[in-house]
Length: 231
Picture 1 (cartoon, rainbow, N blue to C red):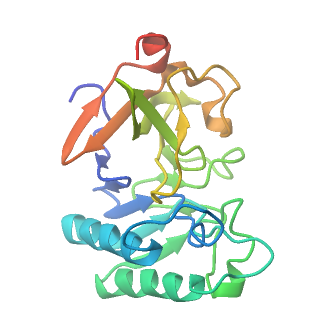
Picture 2: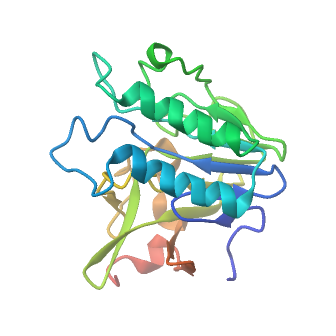
């Protein structure tokens, strides 16, 4: 693929940064099934762990970073959330990796489930990982964020997607991750206009390219400013 970042490999709803040996995912939203009328066939925990285990086996990272919203919890912790978080921690540890969790806007109760969340994660290659619901807390060589849950509609079908913005924040690359949970429908980016987005990093989305990963195939599209009205 041309015009996609050399510093990042796109995976199934997650990205691998080879120079940092880090797997980055966002918007896991553990507990969303308890707050939703929609259920996954496998159940939330089994679905999350099955896909996480596949990524850990594929990339064998030394670090796993969650770019915010590990949780989807307000007021009290629903039954099963603690156990799911512990299962995620165990899966990462069993793979020989360190887990770093960045605090997102839904992670107000991270302490209640024993998660020591940080404002941002600065990786070994200079990449800064944070949630993206506000401005970057520190300067980085590049940025990986979540929060937006981007999705693109192609021929009537909605696909979770990455948004890759070369040199889109003060001359540095930005990648917006799709939601790792499959219970998030996603925010359609087909008609995304200036200042429509949830993330401050997408205030001007025209220079961002949707990237879809499906069944092992990676499809990169032209920038949103060129695509508007075509998809």
